[in-house]
Length: 102
Length: 421
Image 1: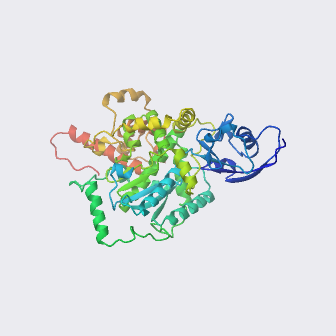
Image 2: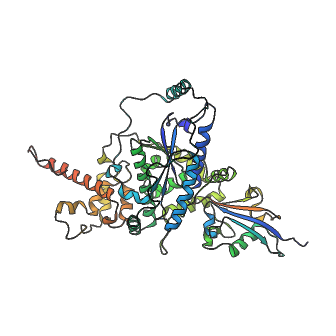
Image 3: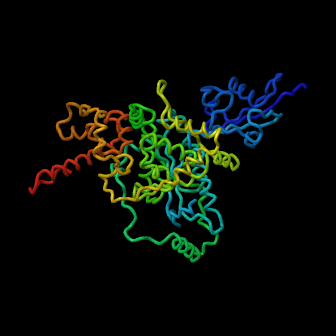
C-alpha cells in the first residue's frame, strides 16, 4: 500500500513551545517512508526536525517526558494507544507541558 | 471547595495571585464563572488581581518582559476586575514590617459563615439587585499609577540580579524567589485592605511541594505550607482553592475552554549546577505518576491529614524571620549545628564605627532568628550586603531587641536610659 502524504498540525503549549523557538503551531507534511507513521516514529522525527534545543526537556527515551500531555485530535493519547497509534491524514497532535506550575 | 471550607465570606475583598501559568489562569476563569452564576451557589466575594513580573530573574530580556507584561495586561483587563502589576524588583523596597505577623482576627467573634451568607442575600434583595450581581466594567482598571513606566529602573533590576547571582544553590534561589513573591503580594494585600489572597497551586504542585518541603527540613510546617488555609501572616489569609485539581485536569480544562495563559520561563540553572531539590522532586513524582497514576493523589491525601499546630500565643521572637512559622529549634539541637556555622568577618570592614552594629550584622547573629530550614537556605544566600534591605532591617531590630532584653536581665534594679530604638 502506498501511503499518501500525511499533512498534520502539531501544537505546543504550556511552555513546551519554548523548546520549539516559541512557535506554537507547526503545519507539517510528513515524508513518505516504508515504516508506519506511529507516534513513536513521529517523536523521533520531531526530535530531529522541529526540536530546537534541550531534547531531554521534551523527550525521555522513546516517549515524551513525564509531565507532557499528548492530545490526538483533542483526545488523550492514552485512549488512542499512546506510542502505537498510527497517524491518519489531517490528524492534529497537541503537546501540553504541565511542568513548572502555574 | 470554597463553600466546603467556609473561610471566604460574602463581600470579602480577595486578591487573586496570578502567575500567568495554567493553574492560576484556570483559577481566574473559575472565579469569573462562579461570580456570574445566577444560582444560590454564586460566589459572593469581590476579587482583584495581581501579577508579579519576575522576568529579570527568569532570564528574560527587557523586550521579552515588556511583551509578557503586555499580554498579561490584556488578559487582566479583559476580566473587568481591578488589577495590580508588580515587579519582583519592588521586593527590594518592602518595609521591615512585612516580616511581622499582622493583628489577627478582632476580639469578638464575627458572624458565623451561615449568618454572613444569609445577611448578605438579605442585603442584596433590599438593594434591589436585579441582575444577580454587580455589573463589571467591560475593561478592568489598573490599580496604581497608570502612567508609571512598564519596567522598573535598570539599577533596581541590577540589584535584584546581584542578589540572585550571589545565591549559591538553585534550591536556595527557588526558596528566595518564593519568599520575595509572597512578601510582595502580601504587601499589596495589606496596604489595599485585602483580607484574603488566593494562590493557584494545583494538586500536583501541592504534592510536589509537600515532599520538597519535607526534604528542605520544613516537616513541622507542611500543613501551613500546603493546606487550604495559610494564616501565618495574621491579618491576611492565603487560601489555595485549586489544590484538588491535578495539573492534567487543569491542562484539559484550559484547552477545552480556551483559557489564556502567559507562560514564563523557569528559573535558569547555571551550567555546572545540579538541579534544585524542587526540580528533582518534580521529576521524581511525575516520573512515578506515569507508571502509578495514583501517586500524586496518594501524596496529596496523606498531606490532607495534617492540620496546623494550634496557634500558640506567638510573639515575633518565637517566629522565624523569613517564613514566619514557629521557631522549631530547641536549645540542645543548636549544638549540633554549631560546627556548621562559619563565623564570618563583620560586613563592611572599616566603615563600622559602632562595634555593636558590626556584631549585629554578622551572619551568625541571624541564625537564632531562623527556623531549621530557613537556616539552611540562609547559609546558601550570598553576602549580607546583597540581601534585601527589609530582611536586614528586621533582623537588626530583633537582634538589638534580644540584646536589650538580655542586658536588662543581667543588670538588676537599676534605672536605665532607654536604649537606642
